[in-house]
Image (cartoon, rainbow, N blue to C red; front, side, top):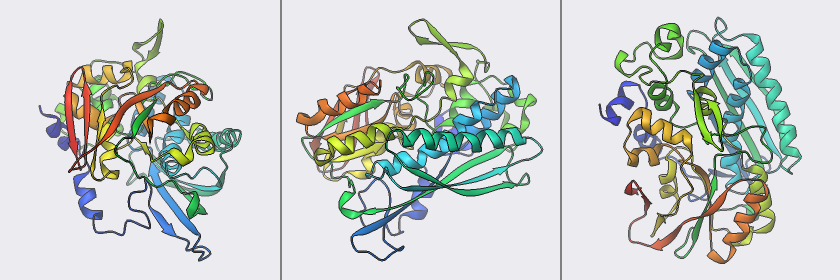
Length: 393
């Protein structure tokens, strides 16, 4: 079965073509090449300031958390879901230079018959703790409350989302201007950063519908029918070989539950970004958060150049597991998943080592993974031992 066929039968899209078509006529804001939409200062009407608002959710990762929690009773997986939804907002905003005085509001919809109050408490309490931890790194986020609704008629298990807002000076923005001659510094999504409490497999919050159905065994389908859309054809529901608690080698003689590995919370790079903005900002020509679109993400933010990524960080065991279980071709893998590097910094080679050193000071692996070349058509080339793959805008 082809990947496009599997995606279609599961009701998802790897490229979000329909969504992009629906929004292509919308105003792209003050700076179309910025990683986030930048709006005029509607709050105070200042020409020197701008407003940012960003909304995102943990997506279908919550369905996998539901499975793992029901199987093991481990509430901590819900902390990861809260982190996923928060980081998908805040790290996108960090890519335009916003790391301070951010307002954050939650929107949680749950099926009360399946999701207990303990789960809601875990999510809310973790949110408060995560915000306090960010403050220790100079990132100030302020909780603005939110809405938690019991909407079992429209949400099968739980949907966890956040909306973030900030007002900042326009001259402090980081607007992508990726240029011929820049190098690409990739920061690892895997490992254990100094501000993390355990190993992170490198998963973000993209590609989870594919990952959980392709990796985990069909025995979960009849056991947890609420974890998937009943309109989904049987042949694409939980078709992998792994149980949630099967042990997976993660290197250095360590192992991790397959469920916990795929549920690794989306790493925040905000402590690193805050340092980069303090020490390297004048030299940075672009910052890309490899979420939807994987390693092809940057193609949406370049013009007149080609990005060549030919020295990627080592492929972590998580993505090797997904590849082996799903049979997805390599080109699709690099377009759906971050494949081990989820933050990219574009700047002249003379300043690349400083970015690497800052990342490593937080115990995050980093290296120059590619370069930028002049080209008539914007594109990304990913060169690996598995082949060379081109992606176009």
